[in-house]
Length: 147
Image 1 (tube, one colour):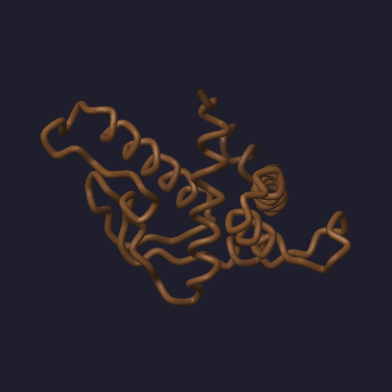
Image 2 (tube, rainbow, N blue to C red):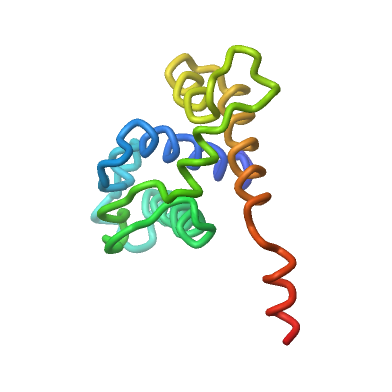
């Protein structure tokens, strides 16, 4: 069984790839699009609902962290009008020096998912999230927290 962090990385990779390929057109992010089917008879306590809740919680975090914008929440299955923010697009368009082929982080994630190269996908997600973390003015946030 995967850890929550590994599951989060998988959700993030699939989400980033989907939004990167559809950018700048807003999309519906629905758990069914990613193979999570909710058992209506088991709602609200079934395992499929827990999996859907996990996906939506990951999306909530990505929205709060500034990687994507979403319109309305569609409980319990997703969000409408989702698009990468400037920050999200910037981290996915980055070309890290570790990639000698000039491929962007977004291209690496998309290609890795299509080919099943899970290590490339995980590396891409780590690069995107770490690059995004570098963009946060942590000093300013810490200063505000202690006022």
